Structure formats: C-alpha cells, structure tokens
Image 1 (tube, rainbow, N blue to C red):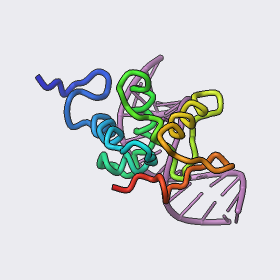
Image 2 (image 1 turned 90 degrees about the vertical axis):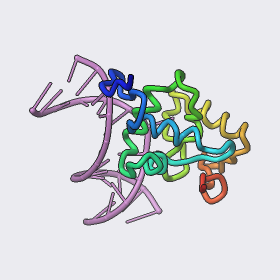
Image 3 (image 1 turned 30 degrees about the horizontal axis):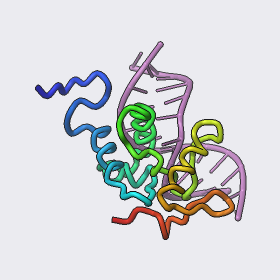
Image 4 (image 1 turned 120 degrees about the horizontal axis):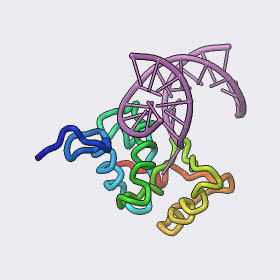
Length: 113
DNA sequence: AGCATGACTAGGC
DNA sequence: AGCCTAGCCATGC
C-alpha cells in the first residue's frame, strides 16, 4: 500500500521529504552539509526551505543527524535559544572545529562526497 | 485559494 | 564587505 496521499507529507516513497531525510542520513560523522546541499542531493537544489521544514517535522522523532546540517556559510542557523549550543556541542563531539566566530571550516568539515 | 511561517540561498546595491 | 530583496519548497489555518 503505497499511500500516495500521505497525510503528513512523507508517505513512503519518492517524496521530497523522504529524499531529504535520506540525504541527511548520508552525511558522514564529523562532517557537515548545508541545507542547499541536502536539497540538491534530494533532487531540489532550491528547496533549502523544504529541508528546514523536514528537520522541524522530524526533529526529535526521526533519527536524523540534524546537527550536521548548517547553512552555506558554515555557521549554525539555529537561534541561541533554540538548540544552538546543543548543535555546536554535538558537532564538536564528532570532531568538528569551530573558530572564534562560531563558524565551521567547510573546506575541512564540509561534506564532499 | 491565499497568506504566513521556517534552522535557506543567491544576487544586487 | 554588509544589508536587503526576491525566489523556492512544503505545511497549516
């Protein structure tokens, strides 16, 4: 039964959300990827906003390394009051280094398959 | 059907 | 170099 009429966005199968989740799971430990990159891997290079929604929708539910997803500048987009520190701590725990500006060196930790 | 929200991105000034 | 605007995708009311 492939319910194409998924109520919550992703109904098993080729939905954008499903691809996005899968792309996020593909991020190697100790590496970070940008929203746009995830969207691109999902097939929609301009769907960075959709990635945001997916993370919100699955945040805490699905086992997604959401902390490995940051913006294209290499900085954490989360607000200081909304898990910013947690994400930073998780990335550091994986070996990702932050500079004094709270920025990650994408040339070094950026996910490049 | 339209407007508003969300952890975005790229381009222009 | 920094701020602003427009574009994109999906969901909820």
